[in-house]
Length: 508
Image 1: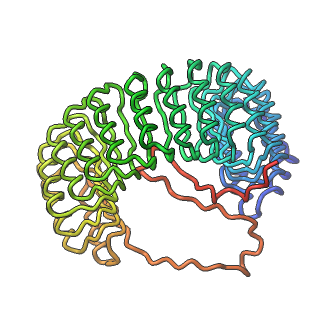
Image 2: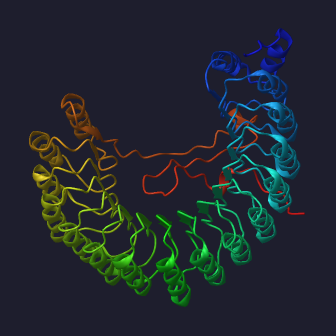
């Protein structure tokens, strides 16, 4: 049972908060004592609130999830928090991202992990733990028998820290998800991690996106992929995957029988690499999600991928945005959709369309019954093209979501939407955001969305934003977090740029 907090502890907790947030935070804490979720994210707790949370976690037997991200608890707060977690066996999910823990904080967390018998998930994103901090966590992983998910995003971990974690993976028998995104592990770090994959029998998801992995690193990843028998999700976006490196990786993937989701966004894959990937897709029977956005496959590469879609029986999600294949690539993909019966999500955003390509896509949608989500945002689409597409949906019985935001649509699209709701009862979401500055058009679309009963319409107008520096009124602000909203085209649930982190300290 939960032990009530003493008046003294409550007062200390209140003193540690901004005055305008005191009532909200104390209410949240007291209201949460009988729930499973303690959500104190972005509440500016600071370091002094640690003692209160220490006492809460020592006695509470209901909290399953504790979210303390973006609070500036630092080392002092981490020490108090971990004291409570050393004896707490109930909390399973701990998020302490963006708290400036540093190397010393990572050491404290590592010591807690050695004895904690409850935590299943731990998020240490953007805490400046560096290599030394990663080594402390690695030592804990060697003895911890409970943790299944670990996030170490944006901690300026390089090859030495990655090697320490990799060494721990050779002994750890419980960790299933490891996220290294946005560090600097480079080729040597990737090599160390993938060497551990040859012997590790439990890791299922590995994210090494945005780690400056070189061609050498891709070669080493290929070796791990070839031998590993448990990995199901692999994210190696922003790695150099061209020429012989791409060939080696795709050959390894053809041998692998477990990977169901692959992210190679922004890897420099060209038409030749896409052609090799097409050959793989024609025979592969396990891959279900492929994130190929932000490469340079061009028309030739898009045509090759489209050919594979005609025969592939397993791929369900395909992201091809920003690949410079334009109208010809859209036509080739559309023709493949006429016969493909497996694909449910297709992303063609940021690839320019024309009347011809939209007509081809419209014909495909009249025949295809399995595609559920289609992205065509930022496609330079004009109103006439959008109207053709919306008219074609009158015969479609499968599409649930259509994304047309950030194109160039005018008020004529309103009539097409009105006709659509009379002929199509399947579409649930139509996103027309940021297509116009015409507030009358936006209001008309919003009214259709409110009154039709089944189709949700998003239609935010284009807004000219002026950012002003409020220097004199913001003198007490010591830092700023820049947040980028999660993109539906991202392989991850959300992204936070490295600029959101506190300025990096000089490496020791």
